[in-house]
Length: 230
Ligand SMILES: *[C@@H]1O[C@H](CO)[C@@H](O)[C@H](O)[C@H]1NC(C)=O
Ligand SMILES: *[C@@H]1O[C@H](CO)[C@@H](O)[C@H](O)[C@H]1NC(C)=O
Figure 1: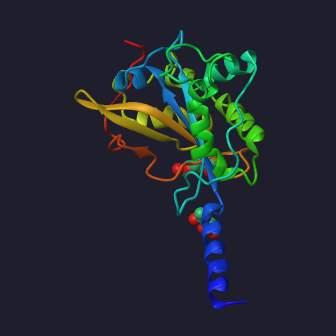
Figure 2 (figure 1 turned 90 degrees about the horizontal axis):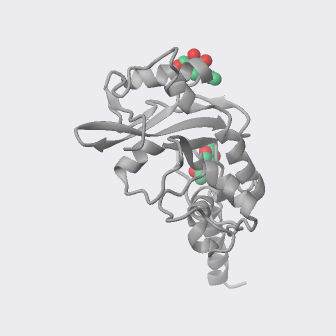
């Protein structure tokens, strides 16, 4: 065997190892708060009521960010019933109309396809596509973040609670630190996403790594949490 062939085999081996993305160590379940999301972006449609909807289930590594790990292509849903069911909690605000089984899935299911490609593939060695989407749904319904945030009995001082008010309200129910994600809006930071972290099996909710916020400021900072769409 020639030396160049050996080197070629070695290079292919290394490339392949990178593509497989190594191991993921935990999941982030990232959810949008609709009223915030649609203040940041032009939403073409809104759900009938304000709610948290899924952005994505992201397998990740503590030391290295995992993204677009290769793997199988997205398998579109074909039945209107299953499309409607997923659309209910994994909502594409940029579609003009509810996704339809008769439409072009490349357009109507592009959000789900993108999430699968960019994130789902990074846990495919453990969760095949069907299991990944099932897991995403199960975890999405594990906690009702809307009731936690707008609990009339244990009220947080919205529309401008502190980061710590939101963290504590969720901690009381889940016993874990979540990850709050904000974006600058008008004259402050607005809470746009909440991520819950799960262990590698997807069974156990765990503390997200510190500091537990992205662009929300300090624990004492006030963040804007709009209750309704405009
Ligand atoms: C993920 O973390 C584990 C443990 O630190 C490590 O062995 C593995 O190589 C990491 N994966 C990637 C893709 O960095
Ligand atoms: C998360 O961290 C807090 C301390 O910050 C700790 O009290 C709690 O037990 C941890 N929860 C889990 C599930 O590890």
